[in-house]
Amino acid sequence: MNHTPKKLNSNRIVIIMFVKGTLKKAGILLTLALMPLLFGYFLISFLLFSFIAFMMQFFRDPERSVEVSEGMILASADGRILNGKIDKIKIVNYDDHLMKYILEKGKRGILISTFMSPFDVHVNRVPVSGKVIKTKYCPGKFQIAWKDVQKENEKNLIVIDSKYGKVGVIQIAGFVARRIVQYVKVGDHVKIGDRLGMIRFGSRVDIILPYENCEVLVKIGEKSKAGETIIAQMIENNI
Image (tube, rainbow, N blue to C red; front, top):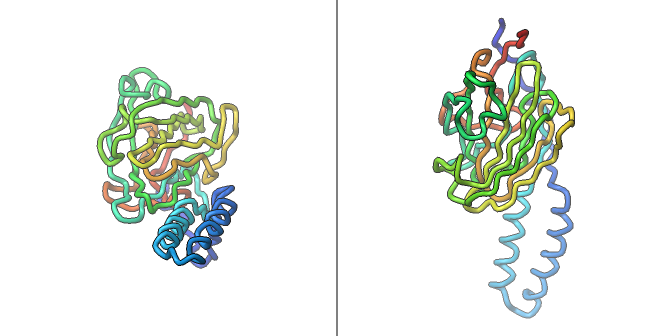
């Protein structure tokens, strides 16, 4: 099997978009920020303008595209700015937390985890084409997401049935992130690179792939770009 993915088109124009409702909220806040300025309260205006700038960068939703080749698995999360990165790759088993919804009994999986800093794009992407067959919201704590928080923190599981087997995406909230948003529902047919959901204000995303027919193409410490970085190559499951 040829594991060499097609090259990305580096000459394309990147269109910066924002999550729905962001521009409307920014307009309201901008109006409020101007009012103290008119009365000489420069510090208040400065703080409001700083908050608007942070909100605009956080809720950005740029277009992403990649030439898809057979068996390609794409990153679901950005881990690019500051300490954002792929920080965990490990083997998981059926008895591990939430794995019974993804793996068959006696089977193993590969977990690839990406930590997102508060300055990364927080819109998550579909890692592989298929059908959404399971979603599960799990309430929990809001501990700092660069710790081992897979069990304790609030999270949302999405399971996609692909021709390579079941693939799981777990959105995990962090200390700042207090709301997980899911864009898909059970029964939806999703396409690789589509928007899957978002986690507001920093956190992490885990991808779980079948162990038997998966070749991981990234290493711990590497940066990832949702919907563009190729993290693994799959062999079609004919069983």
